[in-house]
Length: 225
Image (cartoon, rainbow, N blue to C red; front, side, top):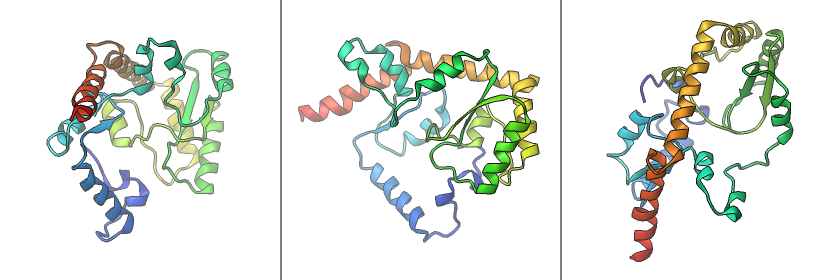
């Protein structure tokens, strides 16, 4: 991965000790993955092409079938439309609240599933959001886990010091919402959204094709054997 730094790695394996227990576990699981029939990833080719290209020669067939929720739009059977990809029950109240706001006026805040913050960092971040005077939606639940190097490469993120201070949070939120740089990031995010939809929308999409290949090459071929 281009631009990856030690500080970008999740804290539970951010170590220089080769005998660290969690690091040994991750290495062990990685070796086991080489023996798998297939590797299935919830992403799409255009978004992480360099990573997928690097993994493919090293692992069993890699199938990028994301975004899963967009693939669900292709389901024709009404009974199967009840199937979802969320691990937690969705809160429709958030969507109703968002619908009451003007487009591009709300800051979405989500720390993902593995981020750990001290109480002091949490307070500083909260005050930074409040001081920006921007409307925000703060989701306290696991979601997409994405490192800053990828966000910067995709053109949709700005980095903040790990020793977070409210003034810096306030400044970055205002820059994101009001500056030309922020507008460019929103534009880029919409471009990625379009590519994600195209990947999953039809039989020509890369994720749609990968899903078909997964079924035919990995699942059905195994059942025949």
